[in-house]
Image (tube, rainbow, N blue to C red; front, side, top):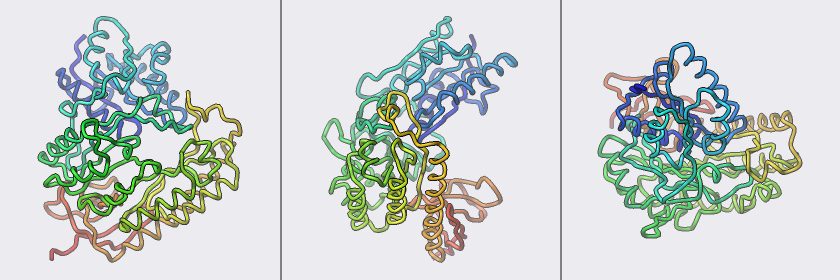
Length: 441
């Protein structure tokens, strides 16, 4: 079997994006070259996410499309199911699908070359589970694309076992990487053109260096001292792991971005207890107050789940009140999705989909007004923006500020992705700022 080209299809979070870059690096170390579409690839990897509902149905649909493609063109010769769905449902899907060649969970990526050899020998292997402290993370194998913004894993897995979340079952228990290894990776990325680094972890503020015991405050301080770095960001935090040291660091690390993602999930204490979140509505409010006292410049974003089992109208109103009080710069809202193996999937009191959908619409309406007001407050101000490239529509270019806000502006001669630009904001919508390049001082 001649395998010369590959295509990796990525679904889900930034962790999956980085995982796909590592899968690409492993394939390229074996001599395969990337192509831009599945139709021309010998090997197609589906790097999947199982956080949301119908993840398995989405995989089955895509496998059906790839099966038809193989019948019509002969490609892809090999189809691998990777990522969280592979860990959770992979063996069952392998038995159901005629086109699927192998299954590879996120804890076994280094086994990819061996799996391809088994496939070439006529096998249909499965690699799942989590062994060792490095979780098969090898920074030297990652194929970095996108230049100025780069992702770096700080901690794998999650120990929190929120009742709705499948991550502990698909990514395993928490394993932190050594601080020195993370800083060395960041330094190498900055030396080769990165300007902004985002440190990743499912519960990143649970980070503890296995060699020294250093916490996230120490890690942010160390990364922030890397010469040539513009900004360091980090996601995703859990409210229960914000220490006074970390709160203080938010206002003290000079290169720390002004964007903080801090999910609260629900405004009702009754719902939070059923979610196993380990804080109350008041705990969250007090944490936000302490964070804003230490770093008043921060823009906050959050995650919210509506329609959790047992959620009534009063519970949902508590969520709306918290959103109106905190005034998040960005909000990601979701209708509850029952996930396999999670305690909440067995809870009584399911909220009808239609009711949950209307609640989500109301949540977005409230948030839309808040975001518009916050973004309009930037009109007339000058912000520093890291440019990403042409916007999807029109003749504008796009970038993001240190607070993660999207900024659109007209291009100029010599403009390039990765440049820093000072932009005077002239207009705003709920989702973006619009401006022009500020005159040089």
